[in-house]
Length: 433
Image (cartoon, rainbow, N blue to C red; front, side, top):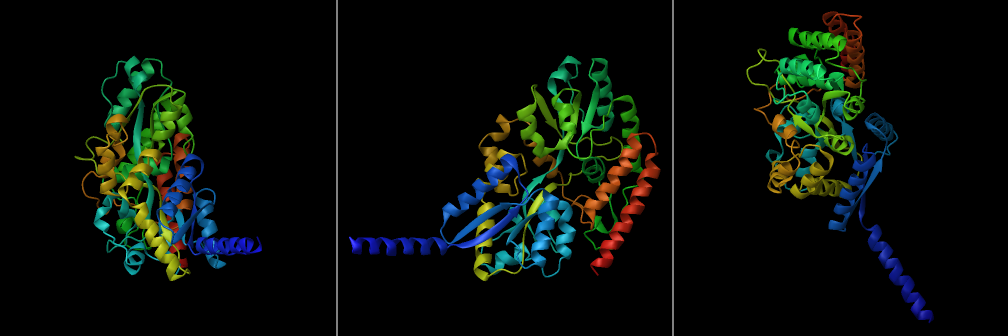
């Protein structure tokens, strides 16, 4: 009996030793709710697929909290191997010299097969160097689209979905005549109506290729097109064609309740609308101004990417590289895309989703992908790389709110926002020179 007990202890210790032999890779993320559960599932799938590495996902709060936590942890030399950072933090991450391990370098040095051409350029462009090298791994990317209430359209006798902003205006008037309170509302007003509106018309939001060309960039979103769009939206706010709902995605409630018949929102809002809308809805591309552009350009992404941080062992980095390869698999990406509404990051994941009949069964879910892959991204449509961008967006929100309230004219409001935003850019430039 004594020998049996001893053998049991020895076996138990050897099992414990084999479990602890797996190299742990910590991944900090900002995905709450159902998406957070899916992140845990993805990590578990990787852990179950091999026994050399164990990815440990840790939820650190919203995007700002996660990024702030990672910076503080790095200073304390307690940083995770992987951190999820929202797209507006890209310039800050790039400027953190010695803090990041570029993904293209990590994959090469870890011996992982890595073909950057396999990824959708419209998604990866936001996170690449000027030489086209991937700095971080896109994870959850979305782009703004137009959602519309098919039932209210039918009631108003509307058969054509608006493609242009002129048609949004005329459609909204017909909807109002049929008893609808407001034509459209929006989420994330700066992202949709300045950042993406500029990209859609191939107009610069900032100089130096929207910041990709260097930290000495200056904001230019107070040009004629942007001013005309904001001025028009100010008019629409006064007559109910547009109804302002706040700085984040509070507009969803007005769309769910059928107060507003149209809603400019992230493509990743699809799952929430599907869950909450008690009516038939459709998804269309983000409108453009007819006469201002012959062919609308691609929109730009929102969401976040995964950055690898310095300060870990070679073995941990092998685990990180292995995990990023797993994450890029067509089956893993297609599942994440179909579950969350975020864009697929590879052509293979897109083709797999299409081949599985997902887009046919869930009409509208392909819209964001189609819109993002319109033409070849230009210096004005690749994305934005601006320092202190979180603070700049807050400045833009204030400016837009002053127009919606009728207090300030669009030109003056945007001129002031550009001036204040440029001061924040100079502050960032000075800190990172």
